[in-house]
Image 1 (tube, rainbow, N blue to C red):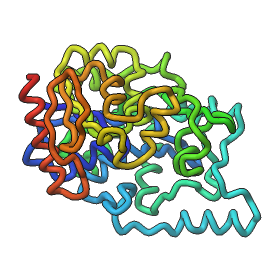
Image 2: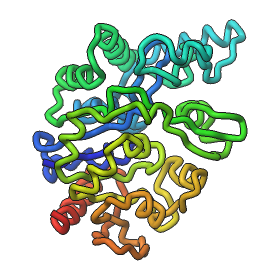
Image 3: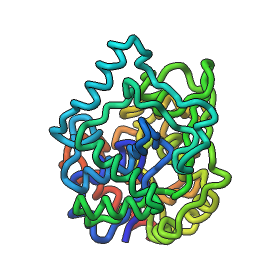
Image 4: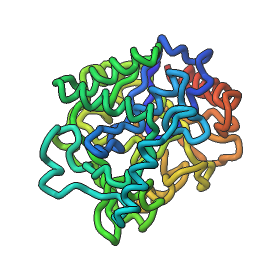
Length: 330
């Protein structure tokens, strides 16, 4: 059994063609929920959904977001109505008192559905409607995720990191904003001054997550700050990782990041945006997988390969390097 920690697209890309290396039936994915938002009353869980759609064979692998060949008529009409009514089409937070009202899981990240600043496909929307409705029936996010996983025919176990709300808030010169506003609504602008995981003190990892962390753990080439940071902020998670074999794949080649906002976020919170900075962020990691061109010296075992993840052939190659690294520390 192996457990993968997933946020963004790094771990999904690692697993996209790696079933022969890490069989879905013997692996678990714990997904970040700090990026989740409530949009127009529906809970959207981007990192859970990327794995849900990937393992269900329906992920749009061009964008690594949403369902392949999905239509977007509702999304397009929401945009048209807002523009026709001369309404602001940027991210629109619900009033402050609404941010802590209603269902707890959506605290501090409630957005109006006007103009819908995140692209939501029509079939994709059905997932969010179903998820939110099941939550409103009294089920936990873990239970709802299992129901959706069954609907998509998943063999791999998929878990949210917590059933409690943790919202990733990026602090900027323009004020604090949810990660989705900063990244999707504003394209990673303005500069990052700090990152807060709001709610972390009261949130707990589920029993299912704690059990999964007793198996060897793989951290894919995800963003250490906003993809892994919300998980690591939960009480007991770092301690659990210190007690089990952990292999991490760097999202950098030296000081060059493969994609996404990891460098800006690491720099913004005072960490070196590089493989060395990733290693410092993961003191519990027992071994690393680095790119063959990454000469960063580390004091822990390192397996090097081409860590590009553009297609399934790449996924197999990197997954085999991960398996080799695990073999060194288990």
